[in-house]
Amino acid sequence: MFIGEYLHNLDSKRRLAVPAKFRKDLGKRAIITRGLDSCLFVYPLTEWEKVAKRLSELPTGQKDTRDFVRLFLAGAADVELDNLGRILIPDFLSEYAILKGEASIIGVFRRIEIWNKERWQTYRKEIERSTDKLAEKLGEIGAY
Image 1 (cartoon, one colour):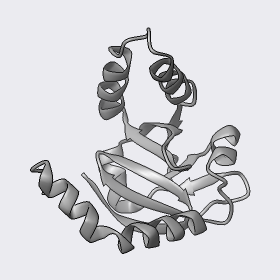
Image 2 (cartoon, rainbow, N blue to C red):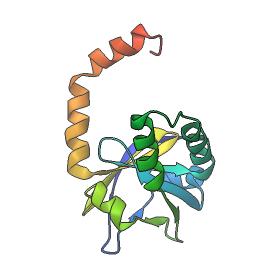
Image 3 (spheres, one colour):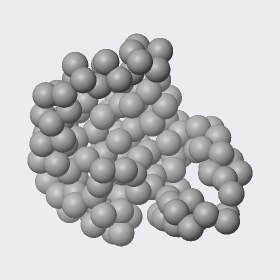
Image 4 (tube, one colour):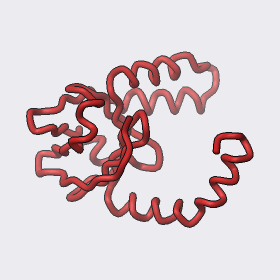
């Protein structure tokens, strides 16, 4: 399970250290792809297989479904953790998430998200202001 928030530097070769607490659950190989809200999603291989299977079962007759599945799967890359626990972020994904300097790495239960530090701070502050409303909506559907 991935939880917590960390700051790590993206080096000049676009390598990013995965927080030590995440490495065991992530394994030596992972899948990184375009996420939502301009961040990157990183999945352990076993979790990625589940996500990809669910996506492959969606109907292809709907354009918005096809568009999302294409973007999500075409934007995926297999990455390996090196001996120092770093992953190499592909150019196109680094550009998508506007990664430079420090990156925010957050645990979201079954996946890791990698954010541009400033975008994450802005996003987090927005969500923090509406936490009560979000909790109420989750309560309405019995999720909280």
